[in-house]
Length: 125
Image 1: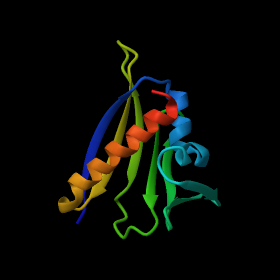
Image 2: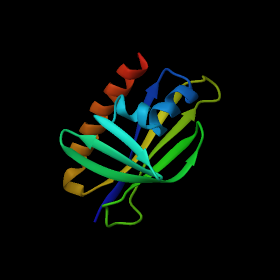
Image 3: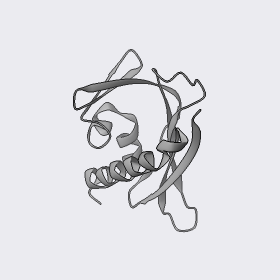
């Protein structure tokens, strides 16, 4: 059984620029996977000879996008990118929600940390 976890990263960029990196094949190819295709509403992610498909189950422009891995048997498991802008400071935070097995959580967090470093590089931060 997978359990939900959430991560938060502060990024010095606009919500529109960030959202384009989270919701388009071109943007996701810059940091999340080696290549990403979108066909008939299905995103296909490629990493060093492996591939996974996901579908968008919910989204709101410049706010959030939620994906579900099509090969995940747990229907309520998803991964989500949510953009939060602090009203007082204007700081932009990326909130990531994901699910993992308890014994794989540390590895999943390390992977997200690495991926977010790639995202920051892609944005120019």
